[in-house]
Length: 211
Image (cartoon, rainbow, N blue to C red; front, side, top):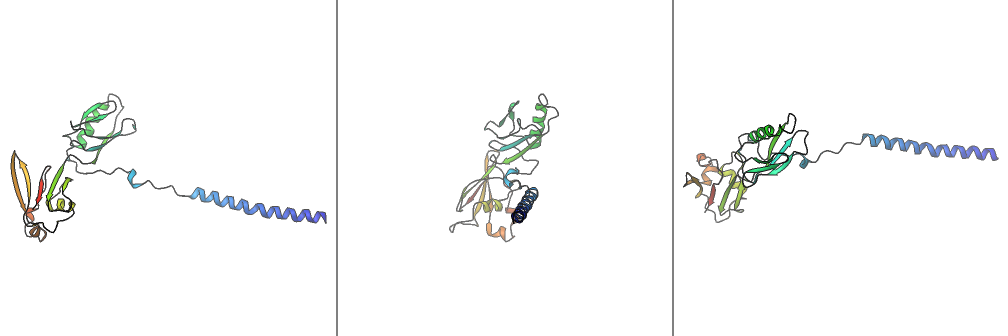
C-alpha cells in the first residue's frame, strides 16, 4: 500500500510539472515573436517646404543634421539678425540662403573640426514669409506663405467669409518698389473659371483685403 501511494504521488508530480513547462515554452515563444513597436509619426521630422529654391528668413526653424555627429546637430531658430548658433561654429549666417546653400556653408566650416562632414538642412517651420488676410473672413490674421500659394488658397486658410463679405470686391495690396499696388480678385468669377488670371501667386508681405 505504501509503494502504491508513492507511485500515484510521483505520477501527480509529473503531470503537474509538464503543463507548467509547456506554458513557459509558449510564453517564451510569444515573447520572441512579439513585434517591435513602430516609431511614432512625430519622431520623423517633416519639412515645411520641399522647394529647393526656398530662401531662409528670420524666425524660420531649421533642423541642422550632421551625419554621425549628434553633438553638433541641432534644431535651431533663425534669429532676427538672420543668424543661427551651432556648436564649434558659433554664429552662422542663414537668412538669404537656400537650405542647400546653408548646408554647403556649414559643411565647409566644419571641415576644420570634423572629418568629411555630411550636413543636411531641413526647414521644419516657416515663420519668415507671411501674408495677411483682413476684413470679412472667419479668421483674419497672418498666415505662412507656402511655395506657390495663390489668393484662393490663402483665403481657404482664413476659414471662409462672413455673411457681410463683398466677395466680388476683394483685392490684394502689395508694396512694389516703395509704391502700393492693388490687384482685384472677384471670388465668384474665379471659382466659376471666368477670370483665373486674378488668382495671382502671392508674395511675402501681401495683404488680402475682404471688404
